[in-house]
Image (tube, rainbow, N blue to C red):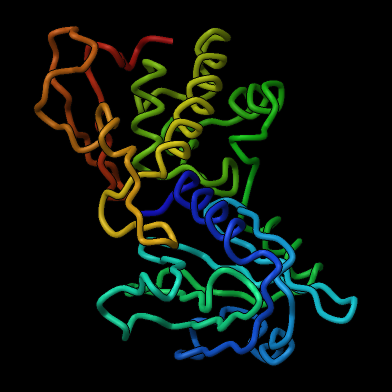
Length: 280
């Protein structure tokens, strides 16, 4: 469930609490939870956490030791969480990685992931570059208007599927794609390359606004998301269409929110009055 806003919230909370701390030890409970670089695990013992950033839906810890830099990458996947020890979840069996810290504000960072759709990777600079290039397209918070417009003009296919295509636009999942398209008044099945210029610009502006508002609210705790300090995201209270099937459209148009099941088994929530498929 965690999408770009949730991953950004995690990165910011970690940045506040663990940058400058030293990794005393690192325990991995499942060998298969480390996608790449398991043989380099011992290098991280004694390394300093120099920075924390987000790439798509992943969180990257930059670690330095004796003039060398390596990266610890945590994929949040569908149910992955990075939590401080005092806010550890009830089911300890799902804690697959423990990073013991010293010299910072937190004694331990846990990687908790019951469904294990996410993994961790231990990478050098070249490995990180390959990881990012293989998995992530442009970032919706930093992509320029010109780049976004060109992307829409040259891509065929349904608009919602494009928004959620991680190798094209990184970080947007089902929740925020629904909210963005509703506020932009665009039907989920509209062809991306057939949008008018005003519609493209509206989509660009709304996309950035929705994501920024969600980050400010701490993300959306729809199912299992919690920030590292155990706090829940408040943006769920601001959802206008996601999970609102059968409820009146918030715009007051007189229609009710519908749910459309896609071939991927994801659900699209939309207003048939405000988001007409034939409209540009």
